[in-house]
Image (cartoon, rainbow, N blue to C red; front, side):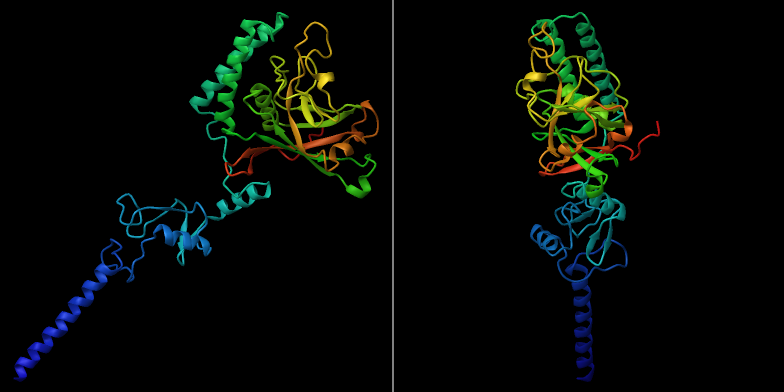
Length: 373
C-alpha cells in the first residue's frame, strides 16, 4: 500500500510540473529565443489597446504601427507592435530619439502641428533634375518670345508655350517643395527695424510679416520664383516708402526678372497683396498698402498692351492688421531712401509648407545674418 501511494504521489507531482511548464510556454507567447520565456497573459496590442495606450500618454500618434499578432513580417513577433528604426522601448513605452523630439518641437514652434517637417527630399534626384531642365528650357523659350515684343496675352503660340511652362513649373514645385494640395505655401519674413524708426524705443527692433503665396493653379511661375528667392535669400530691405507701396530690394540667387508677365484676374493687386516690381517684373517686390488694381493691373503703366500687368506673388496674412506694415511706412523719408540706416531689413526668410493636417511646418530657413556689404 505504501509503495502504491508513493507511486500515485509521484505521478501527481510529475503531472503538476508538466502542467506548469506547458502553461508558461503557451500563455503569453514565446519570445522566439532559446531559453527565454515571456510573461503570462495576452500581450498582443490590439487596436483598442493601442488607443487606450495613446489616451494614457504611453504612445504618441505615429510612434507605432498596428500589425496582426504573429505577423511574419513583424520584427517583434507576438507583440503586434512594430518599432521604427532608432526607437527604444522602455517600461512599456515607445521612446522617441532626442533628435526627433527636437525636430517636432521646432516644427511646433513655427506654427505646425508637431508633425515632422517634410524635406527637399527629391532635390538633386534624376527625376527632379529632369523636371528642372524641362522647366529651364521652356523658361528660355518664353523669354525668347517675350523679346520679340509680341503681345503674349492674346497670341495663340505664346499662350501655348507659357501654358507648357506653367505645367512644367507646377511639376517642379511638387518635386522640390512638395505638393501643397488645396492649401498654399507661406513665407515668413524676420524684420529688423533700426533706431531711426520713430517708435524704436517703445517697440524695439523685431518684426514679422507672413505671406501666403498665391495658388499654383493660377500663377505657378511667380510662386516658384519667390520660393527660390526665399530658399537662396542672402539679404534685402524695404527701402522705398511710397504712398501706395512699400518696396523691397531682393538679394538672392534669383537675379533675373520673370520670363513673362504672369497674371490672373482671379488674383488682383488688392491692398495687402505682394507683387513683383518693374516691367519685366522682379526680383524686387512690394507690398500694396492700398488697392492697386488699377495702378498695377492689366493695361497699367504703358499704353501698348491693355492686358499686361505686374506679376503678383501672394498676400500678407500677418502684418497688415497688427500694424507691422504701417510701422514700415513710418521709415524716415519718402520714395526711394538712400540712407541705409533708415531701411527696414529683411533679415531672414522661412519657407512654410502645409502639413496635411491644417497646420504649417518650416521647410527651410535662410541664414540669420546680414552681410556687411
